[in-house]
Every structure is written in structure tokens, then in C-alpha cells.
Image (cartoon, rainbow, N blue to C red; front, side):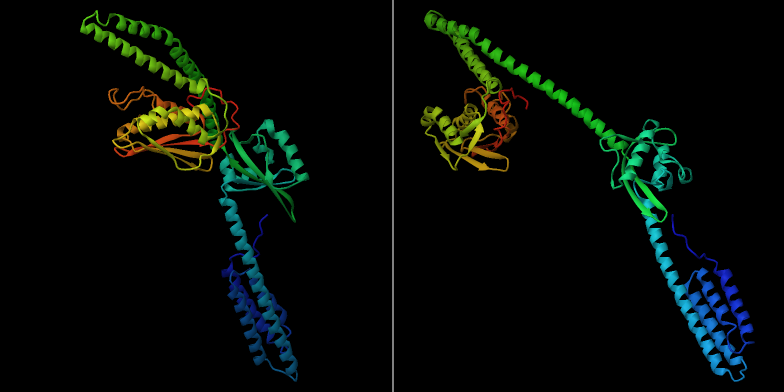
Length: 495
């Protein structure tokens, strides 16, 4: 299908022959003074330089022929026909140079075509996908180097074969039908949309492929182009990704079940332990009141330890029950004015705020969001309580801010308290983690864990920044798009 050159590099044979022929023509020409004998032979040999490689050979042949015509005129003897001889030889020179122009222009055009062919051939061979060109009957007429590499055939083996030889046997009959259908309505498109495609190598091995189709038409007829890409590595990666996705999905289901069971256990354990612990605490306190003056000092101390331990255990179980209820006793999200939520939290802490002479300032307008109002109140209440509890030597000064972001609202609660040492900042949201002993600050270490769980249920995150001795700022985000979450009653530990 390629355009072939009309000349070859045989200059070392053609040039001497042309020169010799021109000399022979000259010898004949001077025998005929009118100059009619050399005209046509000179032109023929100028045209013969078409088969030489360089343009200058054609120009040289024209110049030599013109020179010999002039010398022939000078050496000829005229008998009254000088004007006719001049006219004949002038016309011959003109025709010779017209022939020179024609041959050189044709050579230039042919060189451009050959250069274009070479560029196209280089692109064809350098393509990273296999390119197969076949005719309307499915016979392969041209392939590139990548096709040889993909299928294991040499170019000579492939040209002339039917394209179905590169398709697994189970698909070959369908392929022929699809090929005919494509030629009825040819257009550039991917092949086999929605189906897995496979190529067949010379050794019988199948491999997954991706094929794009196109066509072209020339004087030789219509042709079908297939661009073939080996997607073995991509398929392998996809299969591994699907396998990992299935395993991850299964792990997520197992984790959700485990979290539900853990939440239920925490709720049941903390709830069911309340009654026997209440009985222990009641009788221990009764024992302390009734026998306080009847026992020695050591016995009174022992009873005091027992009463204190029972009370702390009750407080711990109440906090654990509260922690489990974030998932098991959650309420649906409803539009709520956050200003009102913060107001309820401040109202619940009214005695504690007055006792510590704390100042709480809301610096910005708080939005209206779809949330669990009870949980958001608890979240702000825990953060405000901590800000007051961990006060410094000065009056507690607390600032509440809200800032709108693209998909969330970011809230902050900043204080001027004692701050949190850097080595403890990474574990403050872990359940039962205490930074100070009970003599300094009371509490079970569960408050910030509850805050974290509430924020995560509202599709947000919580973090803090602190400078010891200067204060701490807690940041948390709440999603803007919680209205659509109708499954908000499901346990959400680990989400």
C-alpha cells in the first residue's frame, strides 16, 4: 500500500551512459546542419536523468545537451538555411530546459511524498499499541512492530491471515459477525463495549485487550484499523483492587457488628452493674453512719475508703453508660438553632459558672444546622465545663466562635486556662485518659471521648491547640448536609 519511488541510486551506471549517448547524438547531429537530428534524442536523455538521484545531474545533462547543440551549430556547414538552423536549435534548447524543469519538479514532489511516507511509517512503527489494518474480508494487509510483539507472530506470518486468527476460538464466529456489522456503519469507536475482550497469541495463550476501531478508504478499497492495547497489568490491578474492596467491605461489616455488640455490652454492663453497686454503696454508707463512733480509727478509715470507692465506681459507670448512649440512644437529626443549643449548655452549667465567676462570650452569629440537639448540647457543655474546670489563676474567660466552610461549619471553644502539655495532647480524646490526679481535678477522663464520638456522628472532626500556661482552643466541625441521614439511630462507634 506504500508509494514506491520511480528511481534508484544507479547514478554510477546511468551518468556515463547518458554522457556517451549525448556525444553519439552530437556526432550524428553535426552531419545534419539544420539541427533536426539531435532534438528529440537530446530530450529523451535529459528525461532519462529522472532515474538519477540528484537534481544537479538533470541540470548537468540539460547544460551538456545545450552546449553540444551550440557546438554542432558552429561546426556545421550551411547552404543558405542558417535561419532555419538557428530556429530549430533554439527550439531544441528551449524544449530541453522545459524537460529539465519538469524532471526536477517531479523529483521534488516525489521526495516530499517519500519524506511524508517515512514519517508516517516511523509513527506507525513507534506506536505503543498494536495497529492492524485489514480489508473488508478480514484479511490482514499491514501490521506494526508492536503487533508482532503482542501476538508473537512475525509480520510475514500475519500479512494475508484472517484477523480471526488473533481471536480466541470461542469468540471467532461472533467476531466475524461484529466485523460485518461494523462495515455496514463504520465510525471510530471502542470495540466490545460492556464485554471483556481477549487476544490469542501464536503459542495459544490468551490475554485481555482493549481495542479501538477506525476505517479509511482509498483507491484500493475500504480498510479496517484495529488499535490493540494489552491490558493484562491493568486487569490484574483492577482484580486486586476489587479483592481488597471486598475484603475491606467485609471487615467494615464485621467491625460494625463488633462495635454494635461492644456498645450493647457497655450499655448492659454499666446499666446492670448499677443496682448491685448501689446496694454496696448504700450499705457501706449505712455502716459508716451507724458504727462511726463504735469502731476504732482504722476501721473508720477502711469504711471511708469503701464508701469513696463505691461512689467513684458509680460515677464511672454513669459516664460509661453516657458514652454508650451516644450510639445506642441517639436521636434523628433535626434543624436546630445552635445559638439555642449553646444557651442550654450555659444554663445547665449556671451554678458552676457563677461559682467560678467565669465569663463566656459568643463572638459570632451561630448557624442553624440539622443535628441531634441533645448531643450537641452535651458537646458544648463538656467543652465549656472543661474550660472552666481547668482554669488558671485568673478569672476564666471563654470565647465561642463559628466559621462557615465549604462543606462544614467549624466551631471553636477557646479558654485562658492552664493549657495541656504537648506530651499529652495526642491522647486526650482516648476514653478514661486522665492528665491530672484526682486530688487536683476530679473526673473520669471520659468527657472528651464523648465529645469526639458526638462530633464523628455528625460527620465532623475534633482537634485542639494549646499553649501550657496560656490556654487551650478546641476546634470541631459539623457537616452541613446531615438532613439526608435518616439512619442516624444506628450505632456509630468506629464510623
